[in-house]
Amino acid sequence: MSEQKIVRKRLQGYVGFANLPNQVHRKSVKTGFEFTCMVVGESGLGKSTLINTLFNTQIIPPREIHIPQELPKTIDIRSLTSHIEENGVRLKLTVVDTPGFGDFINNEQSWKPILGDIEARYNTYLEQETRVHRHRLEDNRIHACIYFIAPTGHSLKPIDIELMRRLHKRVNLIPVIGKADTMSNEEIISFKQRIMADIEHHEIQIYQASTYEHDDIETVSENREIMSKVPFAIVGSNHEYTTQSGHRFRGRLYPWGIIEVDNEDHCDFVKLRQMLIRSHMEELREYTNDVLYENYRTERLSAMGFQQDASVFQEVNPQQRMEERRIANEQRLAKLQSEMNAILQAKAQDKERKLKQSEQELYIRHREMKEALDRQLTELEEKKRRLDIERTKKKGFAFK
Image 1: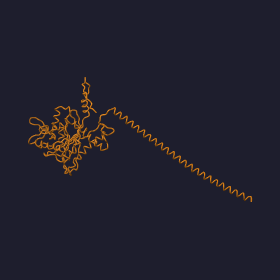
Image 2: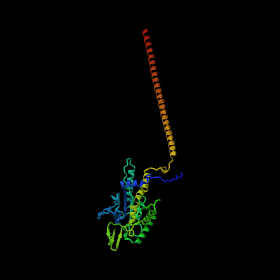
Image 3: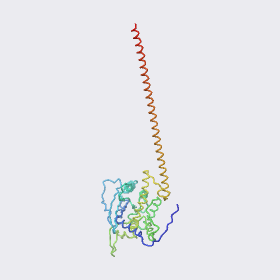
Image 4: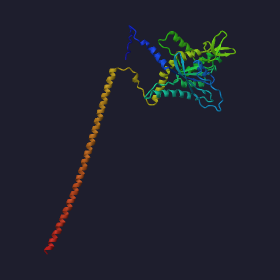
């Protein structure tokens, strides 16, 4: 089918559909937004600190340090939901933490509970979609997974590779280097190169900030700059300090100097926040819904025996569709007529068979009755003959 030519028209006056973005904005502000972020990584890499730093508030409270009586055998996945508001925009933020990941002697199966939690959330959403009476769908799917890489300075460890290979088709993976302040700038650059080489070698799909046809040069340049920082070298802190000159900053204070969290010369926190929150949060939500969830949904329904007809994605000619429906209706009527004729013929044959059977039964009964009557007649005639003989004998005795 040839492509339809698009004709561009210039309006002679104000119509009003240019106000659609404002309508969408009002509706979005009214209903609010939902965003679920998972943080995965070994203990002590600053996962909770980073989340609190990103949203500039204490989302995850400090964890009490205690020595367990016995080592845990599974990863304890925890979900914490907070309702936050900024300039009238409400956000339901859910943070999924995975304490215990990588802390076992044998970590071969550490990815299973995490993948199971992601797919369980997809299943919950799928069940909501397939209900007969659907209310407002509650979206608890994971929209972004921040994976913390230990600052070893070498390359990805087997546990890092295995987990990202298992998750990359189910969630938007965002790799970060935790506690990057333990490495020099040269070590960070070299470490990033080795990490990206491992990711490319193992064909791991990480989240890529999209660019669109109508994006301006500045937006395209910002996206490229953001992606050039992956994996993000992160330092997190909510402590504020003030220099002698009066400059206030969030960061960490060391004997040899200070590290400012919001200073791009010190770490990549600003770029991570820009991508995750300020510029691509909605895109992360859309990609989760339109690509990752749809792929999982298709796999799930196919496994259950449902098949998707590819014709639903084809353009339809209304006249052709009506003709197809007419032919299908005629075929269905012909089939029904044939079935009715077959049923009537079967009933007629059954009736005829029953009539013949009744006729045979009547004939047999008539013959049996006739034979019985013939026997009775024969017996009566025999009795009559005997009586006549006896009567004749009695008359002869009487004459003598």
